[in-house]
Structure formats: C-alpha cells, structure tokens
Amino acid sequence: MTHLSPVFCAIDTPDAIKAISLASKLKGRVGGLKFGLEYVMANGPQGVIPFRGLDMPIFLDVKLHDIPNTVAGAITSLLPVEPDYITIHTSGGAAMMKAAVDAASRAKGKHPKLLGVTVLTSLDSTDLKQVGQDTDTAAQVERLALLAKESGLDGIVCSPAEVANLRKVLGPDMILMVPGIRPTWAAANDQKRVMTPREAMGAGATYLVIGRPITGAEDPASAADRVTQEIFA
Ligand code: C5P
Image 1 (tube, rainbow, N blue to C red):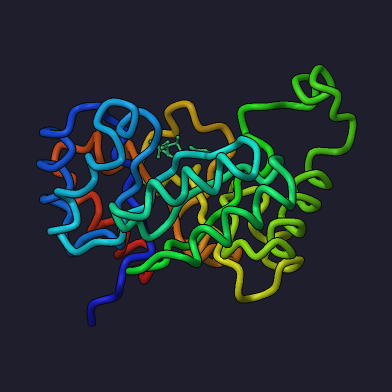
Image 2 (cartoon, helix red, strand yellow):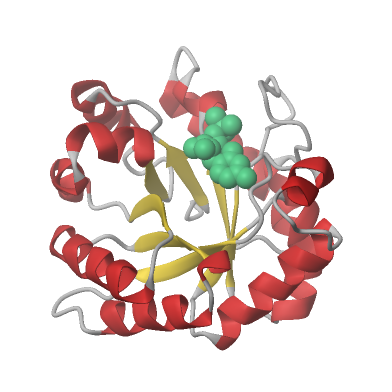
C-alpha cells in the first residue's frame, strides 16, 4: 500500500537548476516542496513557477512581518505563483494576520493557506530577554499560536518540542508544520532538539519539513522513500 508522504522537502539553495533537478527526483516521493528566503531572494517568487509542473504542493517560507497593509500587499503579490502555503510572523500582531488572511481569501485561483511563525527556535531565553521578552518561551509560543488561530491563520510552524502541547491547545484542525526532524539514520547537523519523523507525527504534526537528510543524500529519492517507510512502518 502506498501512503501519501507528509514530508515537505526544504529546497535550501539559491540555484534554480539544482533545485529543479532535485525536485524532479522527489516527485511522488515527498508530499511537497518548501522554498525559503534563500531561494526566493535569488530567483524571485516566480522562481517557483517551473515546479508547478511537478504537481506537488508549494510552500513559500518567506516569514512576512511588516505593517498590515504591506503584508496584505505582499500576499497579493505572491498569489499569481499560486503557492499552497505561505509563512507570516505571528508577532506582527492580530491586525497584520487578519489583513494577510483577508488578502489570501481574495485569491482568484487557489487560496494559499497561511502558517504562523511564533518564536524563532534560534532564540534562547537570553536572546529573548535582550529584546524585552521576559515571558517563558513555551508560554509565548502558546500565546502567539492561539492569537494566530483567533486571527484566522490555517496553522503554525513549530519545533518538535512544541508540537504535542500545541496540538492539545489548538485542537485537531490547525495545521502543524514541523521542521527539526531527523530520521533515525541521519546526522543531526545543526539541529539541536530533533525528533524522528514517526515521533513527530505521533506527537500531532500534520506535516514535517526535512532538508539535508534528503537533499544531502547520495540518492535523495531513496532517502525520501526511507523516511516514508519509517513513518508508516
Ligand atoms: O536541513 P534541515 O532538515 O535541517 O532543514 C530544515 C528546514 O526547516 C530549513 O529550511 C530550515 O530553515 C527550516 N526551519 C528549521 N527550524 C525552524 C524553522 C524552520 O529548521 N525552527
């Protein structure tokens, strides 16, 4: 029996030729493709258009954060490339998130789903104190995730450490897109608190983001297949 993979492969390269070659190998092997700022800054949002021919969901991880009118405009500008998912920073506030939701809802074709970024996992409690955030990190993540839900976002990007609690707090319908995933056989690289794909799905993840264990493998297609087998074993 074949299963639909919940994995979005992170295409972290500025090189469009390498990216399309990699993505072509992954067609049917992963559930979607994630493009971050590295790719989008080098190629523009229209740099994802060639990937639409692969018929895989496209996740634009551009982490928008600005005044509501500007974020709404940015979402509107992204609509022609028909992304399936777009990230915005929840710390931009409820008005910003609602403006983004409103802009996404005006799409003529496909409506992109909006995912919220809460507290960047690169920040520890010292970093957060430096920028005036004295609250406990887990409490701040929860607060921002709830605000995102109230503001109409479709889901949250969260770390493996946060997924079980956010699933409990947000209920079954919010999408939880989870990076920081390492199959049992892969190196952790610079990811500090990792979970295996199976653990993260068991904790309540909807989708997983996996980059280097697949993109850095000698044979990315079979690495992707191994991840799927590990999830559904
Ligand atoms: O190669 P690796 O599997 O670590 O890639 C994970 C992807 O998820 C990268 O694109 C990275 O920027 C992103 N990400 C992350 N941790 C977060 C948020 C996003 O690793 N907290």
